[in-house]
Image 1 (cartoon, rainbow, N blue to C red):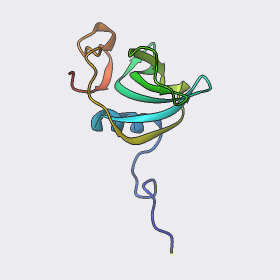
Image 2 (cartoon, rainbow, N blue to C red):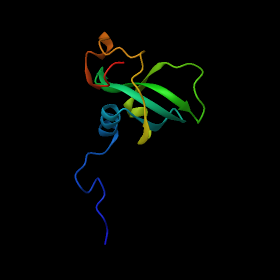
Image 3 (tube, rainbow, N blue to C red):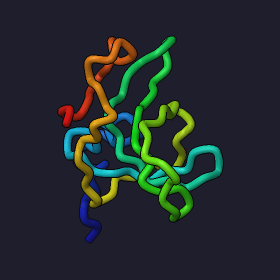
Length: 112
């Protein structure tokens, strides 16, 4: 007997619901962006010129920590093999939810 999967239960799947869940739960995601596997801490998802973007802190790139901690912008369509992880993250003080850039934010973490 086959057990129903989350997708069989009607749970949303795909990049947008995955990012929403990551932001709400403050959990990292793993994805491939420009052929680099990254662990990202997504802080906000927003629209710009009709496309979806996230701003996230890169926790690691190909398993190595970045040289400096910064909030990077990633086009959601460019994040391949996107998966939610169990790793949690705190809101980074570099993230400012009131920034004009986020006027069309769909969801954001609570600011630090």
